[in-house]
Each structure stands twice: as C-alpha cells, then as structure tokens.
Image (cartoon, rainbow, N blue to C red; front, side):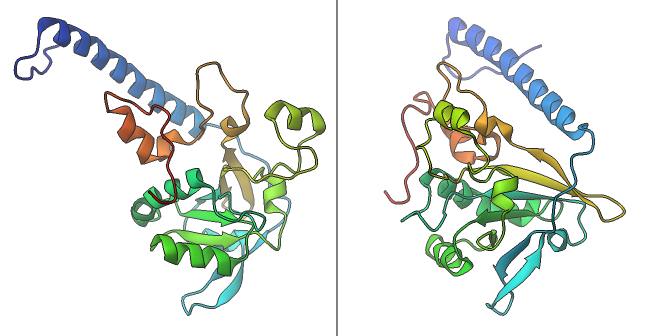
Length: 239
C-alpha cells in the first residue's frame, strides 16, 4: 500500500517507518484478538457474598451500598483497587496518576461500563483526596468494612510464604495492590466475577517493567510516542 510522506524525509526513514507501520497494524490486530478472547471467557465464579461498601451520597453523607446495587441498569462493572489503605501516609503515585487520567474518561465510559475505585481507607479520607486532586467524575468506595480485597486480590492476604518471597513482600505484612476486577450480573440477578487483571501478579519478565494497566493509562501511551520513550520516568503526586 502507499504510505504517507513527510517533508525532507530520507528513503531510509520512509522504509523504516513503513516497517514500523506494519508492526503497529499487527499490534492493533493482536490487541483486538486479546479483547475478543477476554469477551469469550466462560462464566466466572459467583461472588461469595454481596459485599457492602461505603460511599458518599448526592447529599454528601456517607451511605452503605451493596455490590449488587452498583450495577444500576448495566450488566457489567469494573472495580479498581486503589493502593491507599489506612496504613499509607500518602496514596500510591502510580495509582493516583492513573485515576487523574480517568476522571474525564469515566464520564463517557460509565454510560456503558461503570467504573468504581475502591480502597481500604475510610470514605472520608478518600473523598478528601478526591477534592485535593480535583476529581469530579470518579466514583469512590471504601472497603474498610468488608473483605472484598481479600477475596479479589486487592491485597496480598491470600498469599502464602512462598509467593510472598517470590514477590519480595515483607513477611507478615499485608500489602494492597492495584487490581482490576470486572463483575457481570446474569439475567437472574446472580453476580459473577468475569475477569481480573492477573497480569499484576504474573512473574516478571527480563527487560520488562512490571506494569499491568498500560492500556487504560494514557500517560504511558503518550510517552511511548516520544523519541525518548518512558525511560526511568514515573509519575509523582506533585512536581
């Protein structure tokens, strides 16, 4: 096929760019194939309980809400485990910059697929952070009163000594982790786990950064377009 040509580019540049375009198209096909494979998963396990979370209602008062009530009129929802438990003096920089980027996106995505951010800190602490960061659209839930994080790997409480050692976790300490979990509600009202981002717990590969949510994090996509790439850059809460 005939490709584009920019001013004063060399034949060597155009040949290399055409080869890169072929690779970009192959990557796009692979991303679509993986997404189709995910959608074709068989039914996941029924949730062990209708977890009760805490949130702030429209009148700015705390209220209890069950997992089954989070769906509204939608068949599926996403819960993202935010690394901001009560033991942390400040939230995880990586999680926070991800949510910064989502605040505009979820306004649109929620029309089809509602997204919730869950953390083990009390809801008042989460809301205080939201005001500080300027989040307007992200929906926050506190898991302080339930064991959702234990069941769905929002923390490491299910890990045995061998897995803790392999991951470099401090013995006896329960860490929170940035886990994505998708839940689906059947026609009969049964809520099931559809998919979890197990990549966050996969063994690290040589030469690969241990990140697991790049496709929904705009910062990495932007940096990947630059000649300098990602380098050793990592987002901060303040610059």
